[in-house]
Length: 375
Image (tube, rainbow, N blue to C red):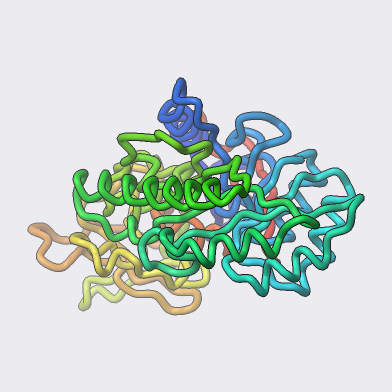
């Protein structure tokens, strides 16, 4: 049986008890509200994780690639939303999934996309779409008060395709500072889609789904009035960026990278590991936060953070570990062969470097769970 002393490094560790607690927290946030949880599977990219994350074996779930939709459909997930604006050349793959009995909805924010979806629909195989709403100027979507465009998109879908509802993602919530800002972001997200849904309904267009979602707004929401579903995914694992936003603590982060010390530059105070940016990703999202975590926060083999020890630099296969600037004590002595765990800045980006999770619990290594990538 493998253990943390013999697993090849670098590898991706998944702390199953932490993940289980995080999933329970997600479902607990929405329990009794009448709002469903649509599990976003883009971070997990794993059937084993998805089965634990979703409310039921068939979903509901959200994906960010059609490959995810196809793999999860193979695993029996039948209620899916594809959460990236649809391009016409992807519609044949959407049709193929729906022909298999997968209730796959897609999102769009233009009349041109709606016309393509309608043209690809047939009486025996109508396609379904949600209108993406721009809640905060972050990325894509229709302004929530643009009644003309909302209704034009709805009209372009009808009668061949199904207007399923409205959906938004408050991306600016990732830059919220403090609980009041999180609550404001969540409320702005809610009001944006509820208002857009009202404009569509006033014009006689059905809008059964009113969907919001991000990890910060799920954790910050104080009202769910008018909503039908919440989507979030990174909250299954959390990461240092989310800890910096204030929605988790480092000891709730379920993902880490197992690495090994391979050298030193003692005059610089550096310890060199075999986990560079290929193992951690190049994501430096915490650099703009109050606490810069470098390329990751260093923990001992039990997963306990070592005070003020971070990955301060990274080459392709080399990680440079050192004390955070201004630390009041010297770096610990970490001989060659010492094994460490690194908490990641961004769970999605770090996870994408690996083809499996090495699942661990209090007793050590438990199993390997496959994960996948691609579009």
